[in-house]
Amino acid sequence: QMMATKTWTTLHTGLIKTYLGSFALSILIILLMQTQN
Image (cartoon, rainbow, N blue to C red):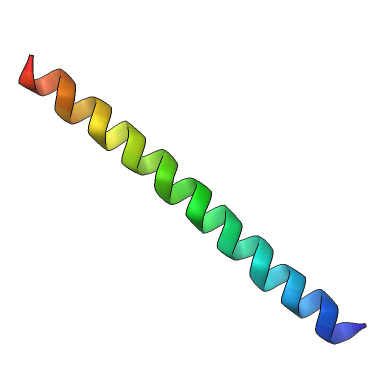
């Protein structure tokens, strides 16, 4: 039981990091495109 919880937490953290990373990347690209105009 404890092992499963730990695995889920690690997986969940990884998903959040991936989501935040892609989100930040999108904002960065938008900002770069705006400065070019």
